[in-house]
Length: 496
Image 1 (tube, rainbow, N blue to C red):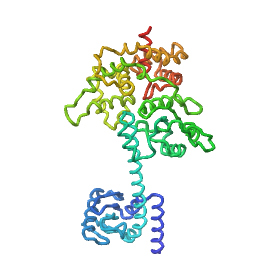
Image 2: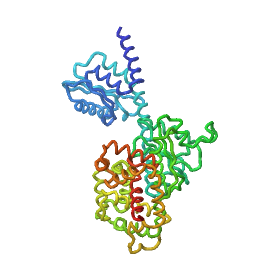
Image 3: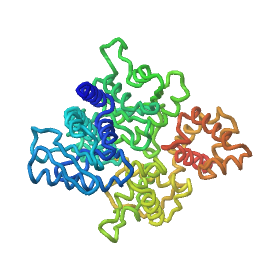
Image 4: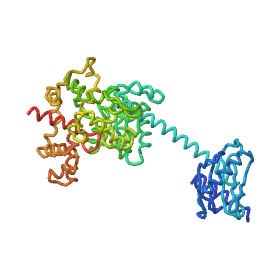
């Protein structure tokens, strides 16, 4: 009868190893011992533990097991037991073929020990060793995946901030090669599907797409794909583009795609794809491409370049008092991320919200602006985009800084751009323009805008959602078109 019970125990432990792994095996051992069970390193570090008895604290059992593990390592024996007045610690190496510094199974049980505990412990070693080895491989794989994901995220951040040479150096250790020219796709997945959708995107593009898990939005994938290439060009899809292919393969995902751009303009392409995503949410096909629209930074001319230099000069000339404080380049990257992602910039930059708030306040003080106002935000956003535009970089020293933003917005190129931006708004009638102007006047805050319009907050949100579809731009989610729209309205008002 005892042999039958032992055989049943062994079968149960192998079944637990398959279904629950090492935690379930340790839990069963702890219950049988009415004590504590754990896996430790040879130096006494507890790697995993389960307590099956609340009569004495788990940290006391762990301390006793750690002491016994160190003594086992020092003696080099095949097993070890350590007794105290109230309890005993039993130790067995998980892998008897390994050296003395390998992992050990430890049981700490109150006296008197249950009958057959040592035998049960010996029978548990093999399935526990197999489970632990499998889980160790999986943990290493997850660490490798995390390291690669963080590397790709770092490359994207470098591309967004214009640090191309460093981005190429970091990307050299990963695959595929950064494309140039390119398109950016933003794929919005349902909860918990991002890894599976990333695999589908990689298969659909034949491994030619640079795939990044968005650090800001947990449901977004960012795809940097070679321009002009199609997904599955030789397959049954007949050369369908990647956005159509992904939207067709994944039922509940939405895809927005940018225009074709060069690698230095990756940040612009990302914002285009994000705006296209806002449009795609309302389309039956669940995918949309960004409509051709000029970039205002390309239209401001030399006067705009001098204005941007003059506005940002205090920030670019800033030198921190302490070496550990952020310098001008880091502050500029911080304010650019904040303008693009608002409070989500903490996830993008991996900094605390208090750090972000302190940096934004410092930038506002340096520039003499109130960065809580949409008008000042729009000015800084345009100035940063102007300076990031290679065609406008000038070799000479900055001019006297006589240009102001209104003078830049009065130029013919910007006036034409403003009219084009607001042309679609005419289809919404006077109510659409009034809603948008009120929202911007209320610093893009829904509650004050709804109160001024005399409607509810959900009603204001619905109006802005309809305007998103009409303008083909994201308004409520960052990156938002609020800065371009404020500039467009200001330019039109100056002209009239």
